[in-house]
Length: 143
Image 1: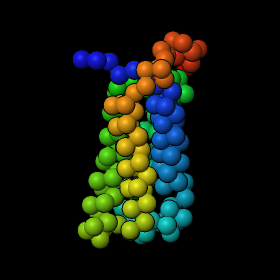
Image 2: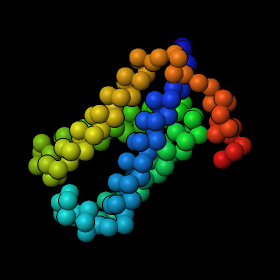
Image 3: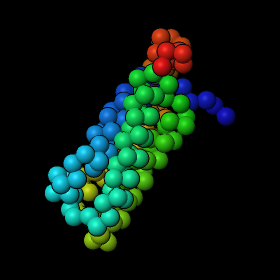
Image 4: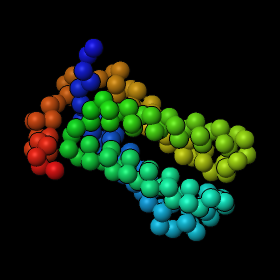
């Protein structure tokens, strides 16, 4: 099986998705009032905060992987899987009138992220590849 080579665009996407997830996760944790003003009322605040915390730390992992230029297959699976999962949840529960239609905006962002991951995996430009050891940030001892 061919190994997935990290490209500069994978690094960039991991960083952008990481920042996006950290920001949205933190928002749900720190300012529930404004979060609910935009996304609609919630009954289980503990669940919103739990999901927010998980999204924040997934984002942190994606950001760290990108900054260290270590966007490996497990990171890509987490990144693409999270984007796919949020897309399915957003569309399904808007369709069922459980959550606000504003979540369709998130679905658009998640579909874009997922599409970019798919493109980067299957349409890699080998000139864009690099070895994590080409950069000091690729050295695991520098964390």
